[in-house]
Image (tube, rainbow, N blue to C red; front, side, top):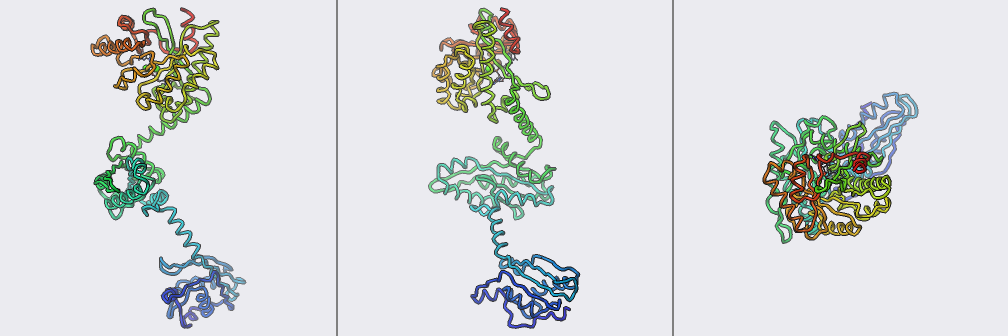
Length: 553
Ligand code: C2E
Ligand code: CA
Ligand code: CA
């Protein structure tokens, strides 16, 4: 059958020739050729090829050589239909066809129809869309998706590493100089980083100011760190942008394929995870699995805490605050307590920082204010009038920044029928550092409700004491670290004395935290400290026990 296959018809036209002659090649969307005898009819085929805009060349055309064996194989088989994709030409002017061969019956001599459906423009559009979707238009580098595809395609994970590169303060630069200058800088940064890479490494831009490198590790395990250093060095030289000289610093996180037993795509996330630490240390940092485990635990804690808040599974413990002169309980500090689903007590030192980090401190803080007010009002009801004590609630700095505290306190007071003078709010100095004006407004609003304001952990935070004069603070709570072991430490005594005289000068009261012995309580009382709190009086108590401790007196 092959004997009929010789390119006899002339003159042949090849697409490239057509283009060279300035003629436009217009492919026919679909061409059919019928092989009547069931034999591969060269003339019919040739006509079809030409019609399809394919052209033929004299001698054994590569096109015929490529397609003919497949058609021949079909004719010889007992199949009645087959479909396949076929492409022709170089990468640049490649044309794509869907070829269908159908036969009227199962015999070799039955009539065959071969159709060529031109799919070139669809496939080209798809390919260019795909390229666009995986390329960053500014730098021409692969974007996040393109980079993910690259990483997912790695075959030997042990010999690869991903570097995540985060530019520092890029947002500020963009805001100050405009996005055009920012774009220009990103392009220059990309060019410089590329210059630091070896030919086998690939650079991508995976976010606004984030780049990533997929690199191969040959023999030297240090190669990734060396590359990171080269990148940092190349960025150190100042950039000239409009009239400014700008220095770009970057943090780099490295994740090794050999350390990632799971999904290879996790490498990018791991490298980005390591960047966070790089930002703190100012060096390039390698991803550590253990660190991720801690972050995952925190995330688990966060989820469980969210559920606990929603399901009202938190409770308050109450620790007495006593007047050091009379030993009478004047107030209780409300401290959050959480027993998790497994019945384990999670200490506030563990869950409060998590709540602050993920924003749960806002609902938690609201709950604490409300629960404290409800408990105090229940005690009043049980005492048949005011039970005579105040309740002190902790406010976190983040909660103060994010929530409108005064209206929350006002609503809690209203709901429980309490007056503001029954409430103390404990703030820390860190709140004042972050947003002095906002905090001052919030504090004045709280004072207007008649509440008492205490500065918690005093002496551990802010060194500039000017705020004490400006803000409506009633009580300084001397931090436990100065009180514990004070009697054996002259420096601590000096600090406590200084705080006490400062408070006196400013007309504030004082509470010493963490008093564990009678001797300490007496000494602090003698030094002029107003109130005391600590295990010597009582540990934090469940609400009922706390109420019992006042009704007994
Ligand atoms: P804090 O406000 O300084 O609370 C006092 C802490 O010292 C409490 O720890 C208390 O149990 C402990 N303590 C009291 N007396 C003594 C003593 O004599 N010796 C010793 N060694 N410790 C004593 P706790 O309950 O574990 O609370 C830890 C921190 O968690 C609190 O420190 C507070 O910053 C935070 N916290 C607790 N509940 C809340 C809350 O509802 N909201 C916010 N924002 N923070 C809270
Ligand atoms: Ca406190
Ligand atoms: Ca404290």
